[in-house]
Length: 223
Length: 244
Image (cartoon, rainbow over all chains, first blue to last red; front, side, top):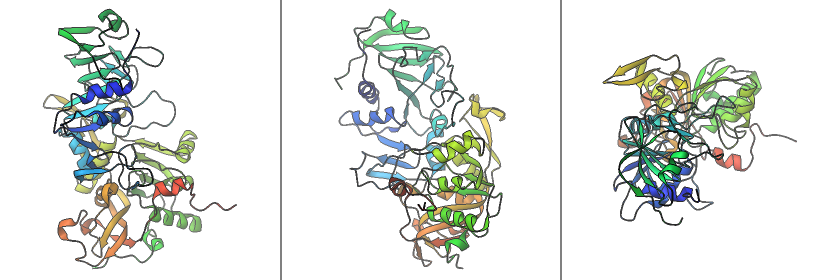
């Protein structure tokens, strides 16, 4: 393998699938980057679990208002049309199927759609936050991730080995090498980097990649 | 009707050893720092209350507010979703030493358990946590072909919350995202004490603007210009203040 997408390029690709008018939750950390790459002319409304719809960029340093934060406890700003609500309403939006898309990070994703993204094992202090809620209810639950772990092991597997966040919940995975749908318990390859052969991609994927029609080239801007 | 309480010390006077105490806020937003510090003052002066079970989304940050309450050894058990923060040292050390119990609850389940407690619903079913370690031992039932986990309500002896405006009837408004768990906890506790940044006469809040109706609130105490946890932590504050 000669190259892979940067995190910004993965986030850019995921952003292209967010429709105008969509209500979107972005997981804490890497997924937050997706907001930067909204295609011109489309307006998505971003949801954060602590009770805000319609937030925008971070404020300039020194102008933070600590009553106006996101789920990662970072200061945010509001866009026109924003709304505040309490925590039970916020998670009603999540579990009740009102969000169009949730985009989350992952340690591991299984071909069944199982996701592991909250715990790397029994050491230390366990913390779950809203991870287990977010995987239920959004019409699409997408994952953005490097295709393999830092030491080169597959993150796309037949079954997760780490503690699960949710069962059968992920519908699409955007990786540093490919775009893969999860359908009927299979990974279905939709796009891959043009320079990468199918066999090379399969070799770093821990479960069988299925084909359903042509595989498109995964092309992104330099970011 | 006048639910005003003159001092923070009087506001926290009735909280007993072993009480279940809900504390509002998400991180520092909506956290009733002054009420928590008044509780610490009482503990330092009298040795009570202790062995508290505290319900909050987090486990405190730095050495003020909830973290300071935990640091005093007043908390036997914490029910929360995310006991990590920029500086979670206080909770982490006690937890790893086995000196504080933790009930880890997914965030949306925590909110709904509190809401259910306030609404008189003893249990409910949620898709959250199905098939995970956090569902172990909980009943599962299928509805319309999908599995759901049964969760119990959560109630408290006392809720300590923070609001923006409060009138003498206990009607409350909240400032921006500081709303978070505060209206839910107000419903779920036998006795809810709100620190309010501005106390106003009845009529001082437009009825259309009331977020928590006064029926859920037993006392208000005015704390003008309350401290903000994030600002205290940037100044490396400790409560009580560390004297050299």
